[in-house]
Length: 126
Image (cartoon, rainbow, N blue to C red; front, side, top):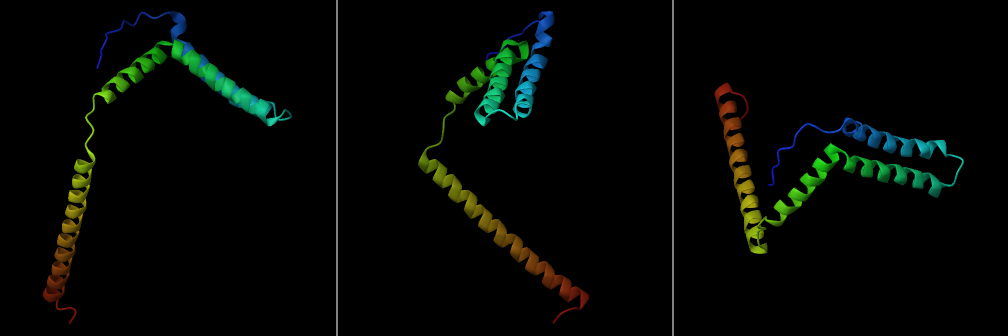
């Protein structure tokens, strides 16, 4: 991934922007309840407006820009992934199921044997 060393010399308001973004989201949700006498579509418009404005303000902050950079780098790395073919996926799935059945049978037989040995050594059962 593209790693960049960034200095800590941001502006004074850059630390306040994430708080402002959170306040906008909270204000949008609060407006939903404050506008209880208004129509439903207007109340939901206030919520959506709070979310959108909060997202925009957060994207303009230092943590928001870092998140956007991380998102872009993640998408670039995801494009580099070599996905397995259908046949490889099917074979791997069958191997996992086969191993699960074999392990289940092994532990079931071990349980039966230990139960028999416990009954035999303690003299209980028939």
